[in-house]
Length: 148
Figure 1 (spheres, rainbow, N blue to C red):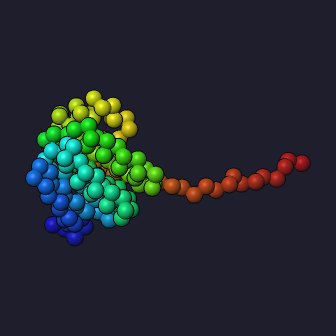
Figure 2 (figure 1 turned 180 degrees about the vertical axis):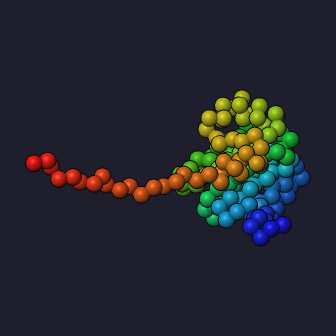
């Protein structure tokens, strides 16, 4: 591994019988939250708490990787929407990786595809999140002397 390749370091893992949530740091500005298992009425509070923790720490970008989620209930979608709204209010970003047809179907049936930033793969998400808008300084137009 080269010295320029960022290493993902596990920060925390929250485990429950039906859901495990890992938090991994990809770069200084991106933290990956990876739920593994089922997100339902019983386990959604675990995901909510992990996302609230990232919000309290003002993580610039939270990337929720849903590739290992076998079941996503409406309450899980609501947790993701609420977290996205909180991050947006803090000028931060929350994005989802939803490569499985089941997760994509739930998100489309709940009409959240327009409200959430969703990517089909981790590589697509990381590429898109690496692109930051370029802010150019605004310079006033030069003043010209009036013609004689």
